[in-house]
Structures are given as C-alpha cells and as structure tokens.
Image 1 (cartoon, rainbow, N blue to C red):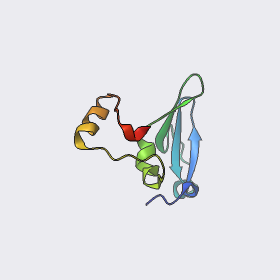
Image 2 (image 1 turned 90 degrees about the vertical axis):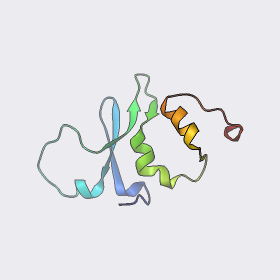
Image 3 (image 1 turned 120 degrees about the vertical axis):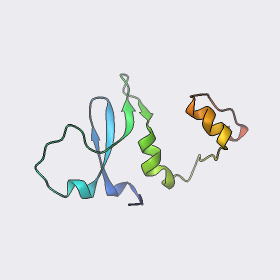
Length: 91
C-alpha cells in the first residue's frame, strides 16, 4: 500500500516510541492482545523530543516535497556509519 497521506494511519505512543499502524489493521476489530503493533517511526527522548527512525522514511519519505536531498553511494555509506555529511545544498 503506497502512502498517499497520513489519514491511512493511526499513531500509537509507547513510553519511548511512536508507531504508525495501518487503519485497515485496526478496522479488523480483532480481540487479540499485542505487546507491540505497527512500524516504529519515532524514538521519544527523555526531554520529550523525537528522533526519526528508519520506518518514518520508509512509510512517508515518498511524500516529502521540501528539504529533499539526493546523495550518491559514497555519501550513503558515510551516512550509514553515522558520519555527518557536509553539503552546501543543505544551507
């Protein structure tokens, strides 16, 4: 299912994570109990701020219209190693 907007999802918050859950899953109305459901998209820090997780980009990255930057393979490898990228286009 391609994400067209946020209305296809509900967002569930646990103490340290926010999850995106498909409304179609919730609409099943099943009575099963789950410890965790959905894709983690944000980590909640102790000060209340958020850190985006990979799931956020996977679900909603295609919707981005602003502040999008294409990177090459070498930059992607550096980013995966948690190296800050320096690029004049980011200013």
